[in-house]
Length: 128
Image (cartoon, rainbow, N blue to C red; front, side, top):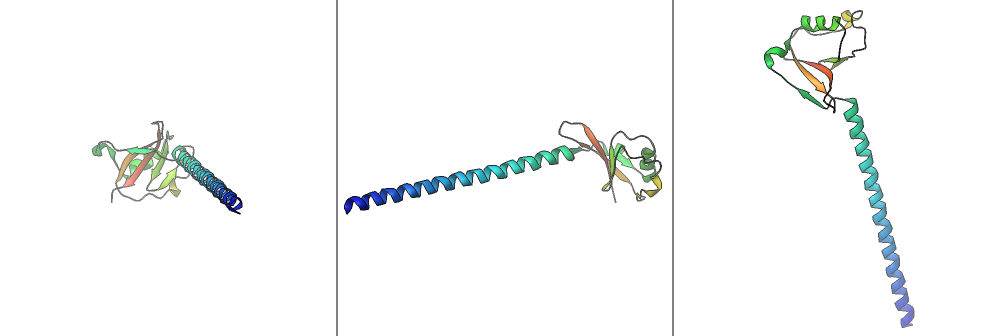
């Protein structure tokens, strides 16, 4: 009876060891999956939006509504964002200029860059 009890305890110990090993592998795979999701989300965020903004001399960066509208009439080199309103550089703004509602305020101009350091957007933020 002593040998059967001893073998049973060894078998039970090995079963617990295998169960702990499987649990550890499952936790590792779960963490790895979450890590991959976070990396994919970070990469998609960085490729789709602005990585950072740069502010220059304040005197040069104050714009009025009229100056912004004049800028919109010409062919745009970059996307323009005015208080959250995004205007794509590929839009035909000349025909729809009357539909764009810009408040009669002074605006602060900044630049949005992608992860490669290229300008992707000009951002106008109202100062009032």
